[in-house]
Each structure stands twice: as C-alpha cells, then as structure tokens.
Length: 129
Image 1 (tube, rainbow, N blue to C red):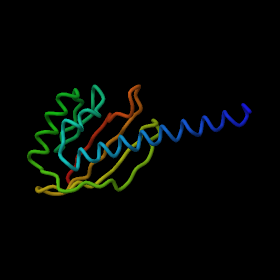
Image 2: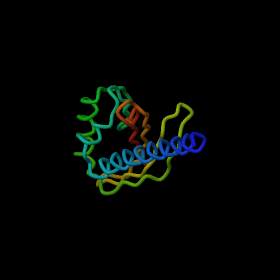
Image 3: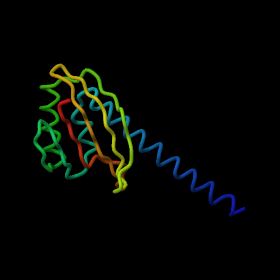
C-alpha cells in the first residue's frame, strides 16, 4: 500500500505547487495589465531588483510600489500578455510578456522565486520595445 501511496502523494503535491505558482503568475499578469501597482507590489520580495526606464536598482517593496505607480500613471496599460516562460538555473520561474501602453510598447520580464508564503517577484524589468 505504501508503495502506491507515496508516489501518488508526491504527484499530488507537485501538481498543487504548480497550480499555486500559475495562479500567482496570472495575478501578477492581471496587475500589470490593469496598472495596479499596489497588487503588483504585494508580490515583490522585501528587496526587489527593479528596472524601469533604463534605471536598475534594488528597492524595498514600498519604494518599488511608488515607482510602479508613477510608471503606470505615465504609461497607462492597454494590454499585457505573457509570451514566454521558463525556469532558470537558480530555480526561479521567469515570464516574458508584451505590454502595450498609450506611450508605446514594453517588454516586461519578471522572475519569481518560492518563499515560505508562495511565489514572489525578486526581479522585474520593464524595457521599451
């Protein structure tokens, strides 16, 4: 019985983790699409590497929220779609998407890592396309 139960338990746990990670990815994508900096910031790690308008720095979650609020105010999102995803050698999940705004198109890349309370964004890059 244990020979059957153990592999099934492992399979179930892996499927549950993948589903949780996909749900968080979709919530992040919705926050970008809707220009919701507060929701987006709720997925940042305590110190997030943020690249916006060619400026690359590590910011606190609160500082990054202010920067994203300013970005979305100046570049109102029209649409956002994830075009590519994968897993890095550091075991981070990464997503690359296209963001269209009233002021042009941008490539958005974000890296998520597993933390005790779920997947969190450790790096976000927004680059003119």
